[in-house]
Length: 320
Ligand SMILES: Cc1cc2nc3c(=O)[nH]c(=O)nc-3n(C[C@H](O)[C@H](O)[C@H](O)COP(=O)(O)OP(=O)(O)OC[C@H]3O[C@@H](n4cnc5c(N)ncnc54)[C@H](O)[C@@H]3O)c2cc1C
Image (cartoon, rainbow, N blue to C red; front, side, top):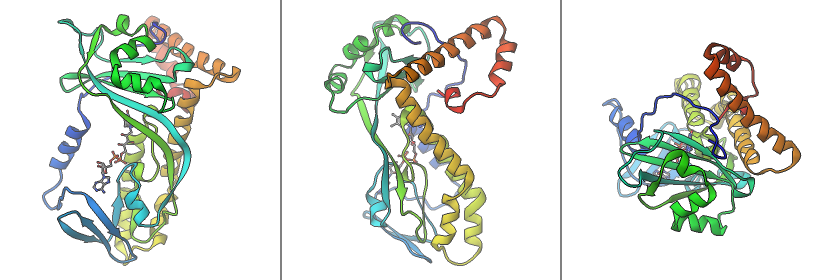
């Protein structure tokens, strides 16, 4: 929904799983021969033969290859002499909180994406979806983190949301915010000087993701898939783990394409939300009109709409 009007309707399966439950489910599925240690890593040493990971209070682990998947955090990478290049400092703010219907009723939809109403609000979209036994809200915003609106959202989330998205209650139903509003400030950075002996960076540890673009997990899984299928078996087949082997992963065409797509989409979401020059006003109009028209065609003739959807479209316009 945008400006109180329906853009389109999709039917997709929602699994309603919180991240921590998903991670725990994956941990439970590890084969028995995998040694699993949960703990905080406080030091790393990497070299051409053996790598050492020090875990707080649990001693050291050594291995031939170290895969660093520590997300946005920077401390361990710095220990290894890996730096980061800023593509966009303070790119976006993301807020997460849980909702329930006010009173005894239910929400009008099980899931809803509500787009920002004015460019000056800096709101890309509010995603409402079922997770466990609550409705989860993720709000993606391009606004300065020191803006008084940010403080107001944290302190009075319901009032601030209704004020900024006036059509929300009518579209979704009256709501209560159940708990504290969590927030994340995202810099878009890419690791530099990362071709090192013995260590490879994946996911956000290599390149951070703008949550609004929704590419972070696909990028992470692309890295994992490329490592497992195209690189690690070859690296382990010969002695040593010198930087020359690791370089092949960072040059992998599928990885490069996915990372470039993540950066482009992050930039696109930001501009689509806040840019106000003629070009972006026209692009925004086209972007949302296309969705509305496609929805109308789909209602009249689903077969024709499916054929139209199959036509080649710019990749950025097709997403989100
Ligand atoms: C609110 C929000 C919504 C998002 N929505 C989407 C979405 O819809 N789609 C999408 O694709 N992406 C989304 N993203 C982005 C996505 O979550 C990330 O891109 C993805 O989680 C990156 O995975 P990762 O494994 O590289 O890093 P992370 O998921 O950040 O995992 C890194 C892990 O390393 C651990 N760690 C760090 N340092 C240490 C240490 N010293 N010792 C031990 N452990 C350590 C951390 O605790 C963490 O568990 C969203 C992000 C946010 C914040």
